[in-house]
Amino acid sequence: GDLTQIGLANQGSGSVLLLEGSLPAALARFREAYEADRKTGDQVSAAYDLLNSGDVTWRLGRYAEARQLLDQGISSSTAHAVLDLADEIQAAMVLSQRQFAAAIEISRRVLSKSDLSAGVAAAANAVLGRAQIASAASRDGLASTAEATSLAAKSGSASLVAETGLAHAEALLAADEPRKALDGVLAQQQWFARVGNQDFEWRCWLVASRAEAALHEVPKSRENAQKAIELLVGLAQKWDPDSYRTYLLRPDIQFERSQLDRLRAAK
Image 1: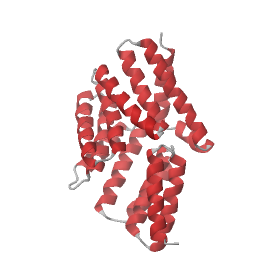
Image 2: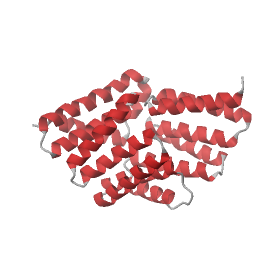
Image 3: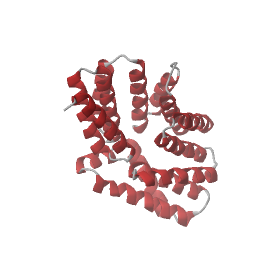
Image 4: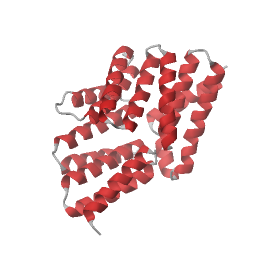
C-alpha cells in the first residue's frame, strides 16, 4: 500500500517491458506509476511517468495523444532533466513521422544544452544522424551516429548501445560501407533477439537485407527480408489489435515495410 514504492515498482517494470518491446504492457505500467506518483504529490516522478507514457504512445503511432502527454509532463515539472528528455522524445517522434528538418532542429536544440546526461545526448545524436542520412547528408549522419555510440557506451545502458549501434549501421550503409554496416547490425540483432524485442529486431534484419543487396548477395538479402517481415507480423501476436494497427500506420514503418517488400521480391 506504499504509493511511493508502487510508483517505483511500476516505473521499473515499465522500463523493462519497454526494453523487451512489449509496448502496450509498458504503457499500462507507466500509467499506473503516474497514478501512484500523482497521489503522493511527487511532481518530478509524475512528470517522468508522463514522458515515459508519451514515449511509448508515439511508438504505437498515437501521435496526438503522445503530444498531450509530453505537454502535460513539461507543465508538471520545470526540472532541466525533464525538459531535456521531453525534447529528445519529441525529436524521435517527429523523425518517425519522417519530418527530417524538424528532427534535425530539435536534436540540435537538445545537444546545445549544457549538462546533458550521456543517455539523452546519445539518443539525440542518433536521431540527428538518422535525420541527416534521410536528408542526403550521409557523412554528417555517420559522424553523429558515431558520437551516439560513444556516448551510449559511457551511459552504461546496454539497450542504448544496441539502439545507437543500429543507427550507426544505417549510417554506414548510407555512406557506402555495406560490409561494415552488415557486421555492425548483426551484432545488435543478437542483443535485441536475446531480450525478445521484435520491434527493433525486425529493423535490424531490414538493414542487414539492405546491406546484403548492396553487396549483391541477393539470396541472403531476400532471406533476411523475410525474417524481418515474419518478426513484424509476429508483433500482432504479442500486442492487442488496436496497438498493432496504429503501429503499422506510422510513416516510418510504412516506408520500411515497402523497402522489405522490394527486397523480398528482388531477383
